[in-house]
Image (cartoon, rainbow, N blue to C red):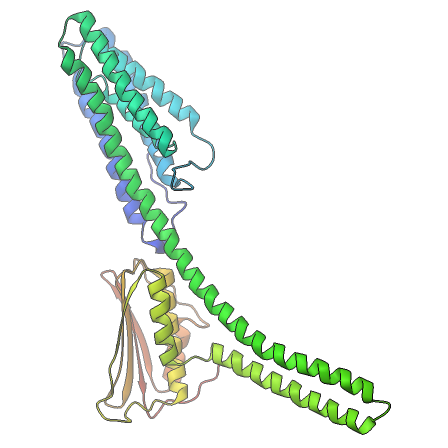
Amino acid sequence: MGRVRDPVIEPRAGLTSFRRYTWWSLTGTTAFFLVYVVGAWLLDPDVPVVARIPSAVALTVTVVASVVLLSRRLARVPVDSAGTWPGRLPTAWLLAGGVSAAVLGGIVLAVRNYGLWSLGPATMVSIAATFLPNRQRLVLIAGAAVAAGALGGTVALASGDGLVYAVAFPAGMVAFVAWVTLGMLWAWDLAERLNEARRLSAELAVADERLRFAADLHDIQGHHLQVIALKSELAERLVERDPARAAAEMKEVQRLAADALGETRAVVQGYRRTTLDDEIANATRVLASAGIDAQMNVEPPAVAGADDLPPAGRHLLGLVMREATTNVLRHSSAQRADVRYGVTDGRAHLQVSNDGAADPPGVTTGTGLRALAERLETAGGELTWTHGHGRFEVSAWLPVGAAREVQG
């Protein structure tokens, strides 16, 4: 019941540690104050024995219910900014915790301990409020504060005790506990919503690139297919009365089809066969859209013409840039990414690092880093990556004059 689970947070999101910190801080503080403060009262020799046993039982149920309810609350986030709780409320635990807290508070108040009796009820009211929309939450807390003050004041008047303390302290206890509990949960909800917005932003950047490719393909195919359709209709009308011209038109259709195929291949090749310059520019846009501060440092060559890296080499380094950018988006919670490119002693060097690598990125075959390392090695270069102290760094070296075409 007290074990924190992480069912809704992907490890790469970087919020698992924050959630664990929030869980331990909130549940630990709640359980500590209930057990320590009320437990110390239970051990007081002046407390009647008849009050100790039911108080101990009520305290145990209140603590268990508090931990379970806070765990349930942290496992899910309200569906909107108004705080609407998704799914069914944990009614059984809310009822058990509410009844036990009321019993505990009633027993303590019966012995006229005005500074302690409201702690259990204030805790359960605050926890129950976290499951309610914002407006109902404020109504519940305000009503509980007024009720606590009124109840304490009534007992004080009947007993002839000090009225101001008996009214003000219980009401202040409800407000203070609610402020601490709701404040910590508000920080958690905000962090989770920001993470979801960041993920959606990265997905939208990918979707935008796909739409761009689709638009380019539509422009080429639409034009050629329209002309092919018109010339085919013309050839059909001429096939009987002017066979020679019909044949000429069909040859033109054949040429247009070949042109359309060639241009389509060029678009696809341009989309898939990228260059380093394009990928650096694209990485700046995509990382910025994901909320990551991308610092690009492209060093000019010391000698004019020294950066004459062949197209095949720029293609390979472009693939490295694309894979490194993907790793930053998928496998880290980076706030900053640094990209450096330059040519030194006849070797092109590309370095990509980020500061949010919680775990080493998964490296597989295909278009992953291991496959790219093999391709760079075939071209006479080298690809390495390191992970440590929350940073992940990819470094690629490629001789300017020795880069060779590698298919794929």
